[in-house]
Image (cartoon, rainbow, N blue to C red):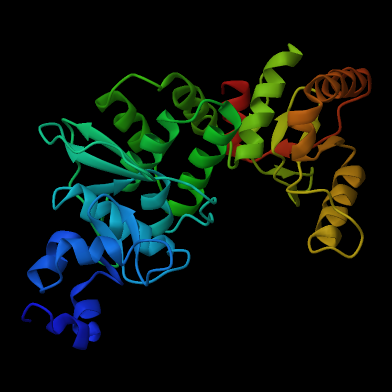
Length: 327
């Protein structure tokens, strides 16, 4: 394309971009002078500047994909997207928050630094990228822990790790190995949350429940093991089970109300507990965070009441019973 002819061939310029994102240097190679590129990004112009030397060939809010493309153009060919963005593009069911940065890994010897919405992390341990939709992504274990290392509160770390295990198929052993391989900075909270998940929690709420249980002084329950009555009929798989007193603890996924999905199945489960003589404590996840002391007291009182009555003839399945009783 000759100098000046770009005005007549806007389609060719767009075709040379990454979904409308392009560098000023690339535009210059297509015949667009740098001064012209920058002028077209001024207020009222038809383009906009995303990052130093990176242009979006339209106005309005960029899409998330355009922000990612801009980050990769800013960082160069060795860049790998990590953190929540990588997890999301590999199946994590989370929407990006407004203003959420794009986290990018670069080899240690490169000098590109963070700018605008791009967080650049230079590292000696560059992962072999996974390709999805043409983007170079850090593998799940690396990406989720890169995100966790930058979080400062335990609940969101627990939630993200539980989602990675449930939704992305990450194995706790793989996550532990990544923790050991990487920098130890920022790993104390992820390590504690991973221990909870590895102990049996299937969700972030159950991991929080383990934290509440530790306040009670009660013996450790069995987590997520199936329970049967004396005739071998399945009762339920309680989130936590104190076998010595036949006490079940259920962390329900949300506050059930009549007519909502799951209400009938929860009611039927509770009726099976009652018919089998099982004592039940039922907690919604929000109370684990807003009223942990009250939940702790409820568990202790329920355990004491269960211990004061004859234990009903309910059993765990054979393998789980051996684990509980050390047989």
